[in-house]
Each structure stands twice: as structure tokens, then as C-alpha cells.
Length: 194
Image (cartoon, rainbow, N blue to C red):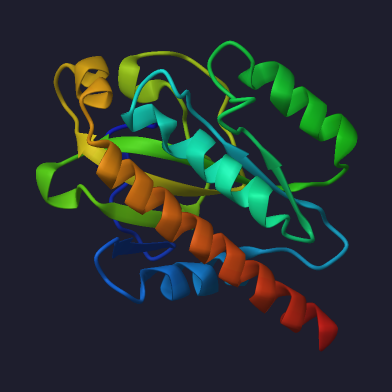
């Protein structure tokens, strides 16, 4: 889980859209493609979280959905079966650096925020800071980030994560997975024309 929304305020390098907006997946996919590197760099999604907490399961759920779609050009770390969490994130990032030279990394994580921001998904420049919302010091992840605001932050963060509605997490995971899927199609088309 990343920092509460105070660290994720909308900037000129950020796109934010709500899961109930039917254009969210398409809007976010275009934002992703604008940030992807040239074709010779591997693209790696690191989906952070654990299935032991409903709110924090967003990342691994997205990873599992992406794994089933078998998207070409994209590598996925962090699934429900093999999550990337506080105990293995440093080792995972070291493995990615060894296996995928000059990789472009997208950090995907759940986030707590203000009440009015719950249900928003954000794509922005810079890494996610996993664990910061619950006062854990973990490595920053990603050249860019993709976060979903799953619940209210500011007090009793662990309790809020554990009491997040599975419906919201599932809907958000579906929208984010669709956005990444669409971005894969757009990325392939873009590189065909280069």
C-alpha cells in the first residue's frame, strides 16, 4: 500500500479517473502508452500487495488477471499465487534488474486517500512507495506508478485496508487490467509504425 493521497495529488504529470467512468480504461491506457519507452526496453509491471488483506490485494489480483491474458511485450511480477510484498520486494527488484536489463518498471499498488478520492485510479510519473501508508520503509518501485485508491486514509490504516470492500477492489482490478491490456495493443501498433 502506498502513501495516503496527500502524496498523490493531481499534477500535470498525472492522470486520474474514477472506476465508474466508462472511459477510464481507455483514458488510462493512453496515458500509459505516452510513458512507455521505445520497443527495445522490456516493460515490467510490479504488482505490490498481499491477499491477506482485502484492500492490499489489489496489486496481486491485477497481476493474476494480467498473467491470464498473456500480454506480449509485458512482464508481470506479483500475483495472488506469488505476491510481491514487504518480505520479498527487495529480492524481487534485484531479480528484475538481473533478468530484464534496462527495464521500464510500472509500480502498481493500492492506496488510501481522502473520502472523495476513493474509487479513483491514477497513472503518474515516479515510483510508488509501498508500505509508506502503514509506516514501513520499503524500496521505491517504478519509473511510473499506477495506483488505486481503495479506502480512506489518515487513521487506523491497517484496519481500513482489512475492511475494504472486495467488490471495490475487484472492480478496480478489472478496470486497471483492461487499461493495461488496451495499452499493450496501442503499444504494439505504435511500434509497428516506427
